[in-house]
Image 1: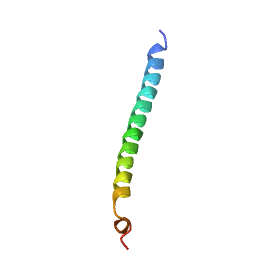
Image 2: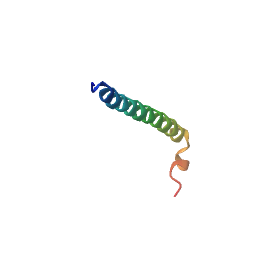
Image 3: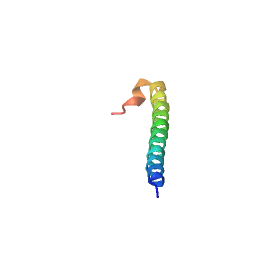
Image 4: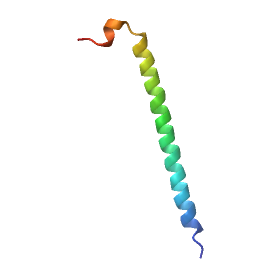
Length: 50
């Protein structure tokens, strides 16, 4: 019996984790860029209400 199923499982899980974390980071960066653009377009007095 070979160890191929274990190798495929470990590489598959690693690949899935990489894809999941990369997509999560991509969407978070995209959302943060949109929020930053909204803040840049606000008048100066609305940025820091003190």
